[in-house]
Amino acid sequence: MSNLHRLQWFDQEIRMNRFPNANALANQFEISLRQAQRDVEYLRNSLNAPLAYDAKNRGYGYEDPAFTLPNVYITEEEKRLLKYLAYRYKEFSKTDKMNRLAQLFNRIGSDEIEELEGITVPHFSVDFRSSNLYYELKKSMKMKRKVKITFQQGMFGILASIAHVYYIYRKHEVDYIDVFLEEKDGLDTIRFESVIEYEVLNETFEIQPQLIKQPYEMKIKKQPFLAEVKGNSLFEEELDSFFSFEKNEDHYKIEYNDEEELLQLLMKSMNWEKVLSPNWLKNKLYQRLQNIMEKLNMEK
Amino acid sequence: MSAITIPNIHVTKNSNSFTDSLYAILSAKGVYSDEKFMLSALTGMAFKFVIHKRIIPSSIDMMSWEVDTKLAIERIGFYNENYCGFTNDPTFPLYQRAAIEKIKRSIDKGTAILTRSPKTIQFGVIYGYDDVDGIFYCQDRSHEGEMIPLLYQNFGILDTACWYYAIIGDHVQMNKRNLFIEAMILAVDEWETLYPCYPQTNKEYASGRLAYQYLIDALKKEDFHTFGAFHCLKTYCKSQQERALFFKEVSNEFSEVERVYEIYQKVAELYQLVEQELKATYEETVFNSKLTRNLVGIVEEALVLEEQAMDFIKRCNEEILHNRFINYYDVNGQ
Image (cartoon, rainbow over all chains, first blue to last red; front, side):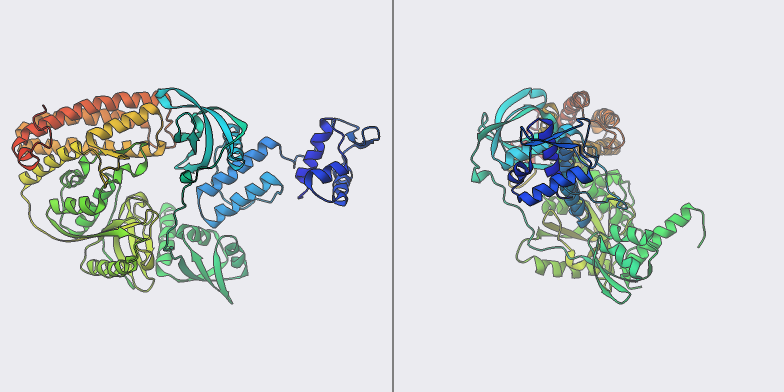
């Protein structure tokens, strides 16, 4: 459903009495007229929109203004929330699983929807204020637009300044922005929650190269652990989402950086027969099961 | 079984990460049977009070790992070889290879290794190895009782890009009274040191008296790392208890230090209030203005008391301090 955002725009135009047509849709999204016509047909035939062509205004309107787009559509605010979630999941962990989720939220935030079932993920409490702030500041950063910002600096009071946003990041459970403050003529770090008011201005700023951080990269990379496990084809499916592995008949050579992830899979999966190596992984698994048995007051 | 491990290694969380790890190593080796707080004080770790400008969690382990840890272990009479460096150094692979051999040799002799934990930024212990799987067996206090595997080829590759390990050898018997005096001198030294990081122009972290100022400023400004503040204050609550317990022991040997013990008891009580303010877990703790105001009040009171205690220790050890640090410290409190 890659046309969702186009339909949403079309719907908004109708509600604002701008009488959009296929031509306007094609121009707005730089798509072919044929494609735009298909979108309008989809809206009328598949989503049962009561579209009526107004010859005088040469565009469409709703016969029944009570019509709403189905729930699958998400509001702008929800979209921002999802974008923010994408950023949070990405910051939460650098594992493949979290990156996939971050990408997924990012996609939902723009167009697409996928099933999330069966994936255990950490949940974050997010509020619309943070997600809006994140969205607006990210936009100002991208478009290099100045921001008029008022923020609380603890017991030293409230400060107001024109800011140039350079970085937005999350560290140890707190969101920060690195900004160049014109009043201070220097860099400062501001926490999300201390921002009282902000307004993205039309005025743009020039990036100062000396304020760009050079990314730190380790020259030597960590090697992953390697485990050899015998299992059936269903085990392959379970591995598929989260691990890179090599398959040789029913033997799987699995690469993993965090042993916890593999241990959890082995604890819940019924589709492996034997852990061939390494020994320490077998011992760890055995130890865990023994602890569980002790808790259940069971003997070997 | 291909694994060779040292039995009875239990790294438990009761003190700072250095003391917790060293205590596990020495008690498994059967060469230390005293209380943990005593180890913490005699090595000087209980007197470390370092705060980053924004109270980030690394404050509590911010020290010169090479110098401070070597001296700390030596102070209690243990031979130790101490190695550290940066992972990005071109010679790192050579040091890594040497480290793997040295660590294995030490484990063969029955002594675990003090190192950086592979999973946290704190100290940890290597207590075994397995040549078949090519891993070291590690433990740290944040994963109590859990074996943390570390591939040989990943030794020293940490997010912080610094590697460290210390091999502990034999020991000599130390005179208890001398140990106490040295610990008191160290307490003054930590208190008077301004910046613990090298180069000393690095003013991000402060120590002792100045650390109190950093702590109070950050809390007042309400611009601090909330988890860092929770983590540091909880750890320092523990240190203050250790100091009080230590000075109780010292005052049994040196009656003139009894006043210091009394003051530290009051400081420990103040830090108990800090602990109550902070709740049991970070998740339960809400860092609002009311909490920071309360914390500032308590910490300011503790600062005054600690200054009094230090003046007293200085007066008790006036001669040694004068001899070692001529005109450097304000020994007479003038």
